[in-house]
Image (cartoon, rainbow, N blue to C red; front, side):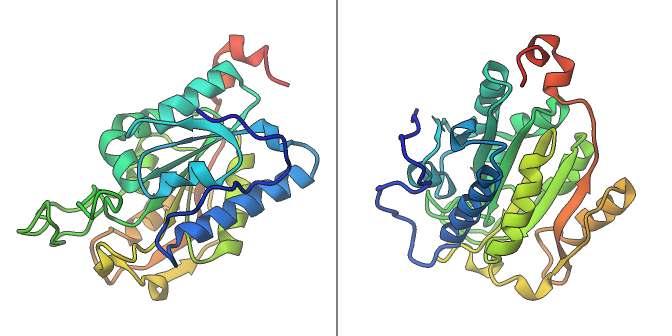
Length: 273
């Protein structure tokens, strides 16, 4: 657990141990710029923000982002964040996880988070591998990927987390490219301001493992904000995490409004600002 230091900087003095050039640096910068913009509006202070992180390269952001929070067990960042929201409905909670932690150990929490619709934001780093533990396949790894864990190659098709989110009742789904800091910042700002559980998938390369999944920029394109469910399903199906031919839409894939956890629990409603 970490308590915020009494200064306005979002940076810490911890030595960053990500691989040089890792897109995680860019995601960190996007998050900082987003929080700075929101806090500069004077509606929120930095102390209003809290974070939970999973285990993985992505979750090292816990040491590099000067926010209060909890470093969680594998797959448990989402339920911990929901616990924070129950204890303090006014907190702006950011959860950082990877495609391994969220879609493997944390899959049940991922699905039910959409049902509960707590007002928090999941920032999911997806490089299609368990990179911290030397490149084992995750549920979004493409078929045929050879690793130490699967020397015969991954035999299973990847799941499509966006379709799963839609089927679970999501109210906010978005996708970004880690290398596009400006666009990621814009999407994260809208996600944080959304009333309900917002899910932002950030596609990033891993420089060391599963490099065959890298360099998808030529297939990416930006969309206008979408509030139509049928169109959201079509957009989510364009990228199946396996084929190298499908287009990859970026932006707000789907947004709607529904009662959030605070609306459902009168005990929480009475404690909101």
